[in-house]
Image (cartoon, rainbow, N blue to C red):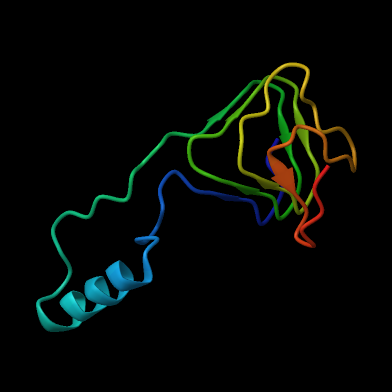
Length: 104
């Protein structure tokens, strides 16, 4: 189950370097959108029975195992597989933070 307002990203959405972003936008304004942009895509995998809480953000390359529960508002940056269940309101799993930036 995936709650409302969940964002799942399988790419970088834009270059990480400020200089590259500025060059890209200048190019778009002067030449137009490029036909191909390398955004370093990495698939996201969500296992059977997993539950993703409202407003969670899942980043590229993350695998969420079967029956894993991701609390609302979590930011998942690393895979959560068997034994790394974040549980209700918990932040175990090492690859997740709350919007307030708390790590566990």
